[in-house]
Amino acid sequence: MDAATILESESRELIRRRGLDVHGDQLEPLIREVAADYDRRASSGSVPVVRDLDPLIAEVAARIGGFGPLQEMLDDPTVEEIWLNSPSQVFVARNGRSELTPLVLTDDEVRGIVERMLVSSGRRLDMSSPFVDALLPDGSRLHCVIPAVTRSHFAVNIRKFVAKAHDLADMVALGSLTPQAAAFLDAAVASGLNVVVSGATGAGKTTFLRCLAQSVGPRERVVTIEEVFELDLGLRDVVAMQTRQANLEGTGEISMRRLVKEALRMRPTRIIVGEVREAEALDMLIALNSGLPGLASIHANSARDAVTKLCTLPLLAGENVSSRFVVPTVASSIDLVVHLDMLSDGRRRVREIAGLSGRVENEVIEVSDLFTLKDDKLVRGDGHPPHPDRFARAGHDLTRLMGGGRSV
Image 1: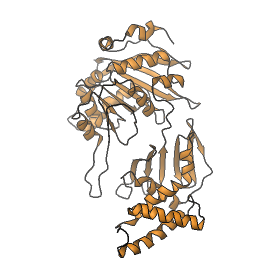
Image 2: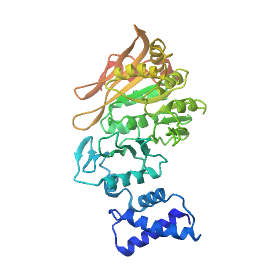
Image 3: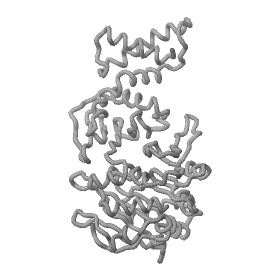
Image 4: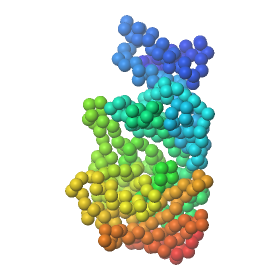
């Protein structure tokens, strides 16, 4: 047996003998007690030697006790997100609405929980790297910031991604999308149009991106690029890649820009960029402008703001990148923008679907309304989708899909 298995087995036995609660604050001291005895035996050669016991203790604590007092919230299917502003301020979100819980922790408990969460991720959190994004074993995403970037306490966010929809048909069933708009988007993705999903934090961009990806053809090879793994597409031919932090020596970092470039060497027929935040927007646009279809998401207040942001982010790539190059590239690379919104009652809806004709005038890209939310209904707009030839080649009747301008 390896060291972790031995330590876990002996800790569980001691917990049984003492009758302790595995979620209590006595768990880690007990494991440290077992680890001290293990270390004494390792010096005599009776068990494998472990150079650094702290990561092993955190791993065993996570195996036995889960994530302490937060585990119940992580197991609750109605909880979408958990965040801690301080040990005495623990919030959860249900149906898009936040609630302050009665849970009160200590600084040491919060630190111990975060350390356990990071064990399986391979990512670190220290003074040289005070921010961390990591994936938990259940697929939830952890973001944490520590003092002195924060004032006094760890700031922790855990987004659970309780996916209620797996394809566009599910989106229709949930009322987020009309059947007509869903049929149009399904045909657009299948026809190879480039689609960007925009919206605020928590609007459901990742879930919607996953639903759009289900319209990708079964013979396509998809490469996903993300900061942290969140997309679980369930497609037949998928390669998923995520970024990597620099090591303690400041080397070994793998950025989103690097991943986009590497993706093009992997024979993809489609790329999906989980979220465009910075200069990787330039590399994505260049890839999409080379005939490779793709999907992406971006934070924005509206579809038009998303287009404006896509014209701005590439300028971060360097002084030699100008808007005279970027604006026409965006116009020719992006075909549709689907903007999501969270309504006051917590419902997530598609607010608008906009089309880019490819035309630019005075460095302003022409954007038309294909579908827009009016009186709580997503209705057909006055715009016309780009690239009707692509729809025709894929066997889709665009006139029927758009309903001749009738609302649904």
